[in-house]
Image (cartoon, rainbow, N blue to C red; front, side, top):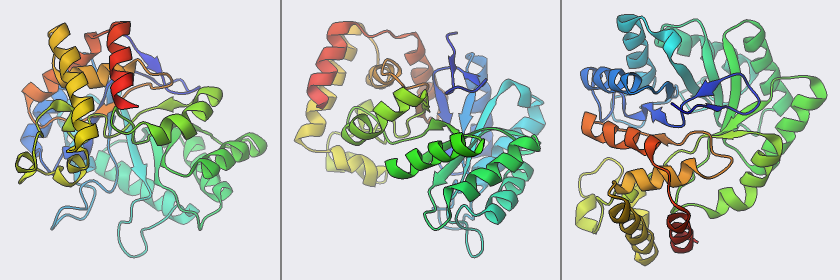
Length: 315
């Protein structure tokens, strides 16, 4: 299977990342194990999670997703077959916030314990902490890299100015640099990334691993009205696109899918995979059928006329 390098690092991944936010939330432990098994069996190797998953669920504390992944590693003995990405920076409660040196050093130990591993392949800044100097944060990551606990670092929700400052600081002080960026990017959400971050990522060879690749499920075609959103876990996010513009984009996606005999989700993912500098879009599944549909996108190459149609509908 085709593989792509993450930034300038030596991490090489399949161009689809399994989003682990569902583990312990909309996928229980048994289902999560089956999904992870099937993902690896399909030849994929890239899994993303975070310490804060799934803290937003009533009764959850955060770390549920990491815990399930760690239990799966222990049960299967397959840690070396996975490029594992997790994140820090979510508000985990009193005294467990931000990106200070102390928080990062203690936070990575919590993640390593839950994940039942002694190293993290890609450790990402989940939410920026503008009260902490970027040099302090990067120096803490440097400590982890030198200790062998982290291989590569990445960033997610961060202003362009802070990302630029971080890259400059890494260069000037010889500290690890952000090799990846995890932004919100899909056919429905293009403007911010393409006008602001894409040029920098291209210039600096930063691998992009977009989240909400399917616009919270909207681009699968399952939300056509307000009634379709009722009771859905991602209803609030997907509901942003239940409007004239959203349906125009979805119509184009479904038209391309019909022409090619594939699923709308596969069109949306294949479009992302064809957009430089995207390395691997992140997508989640809660059933084996959903997962098979996502993995099927890896064999899709959209013709130029399809790309033109999708671009026209989504700009």
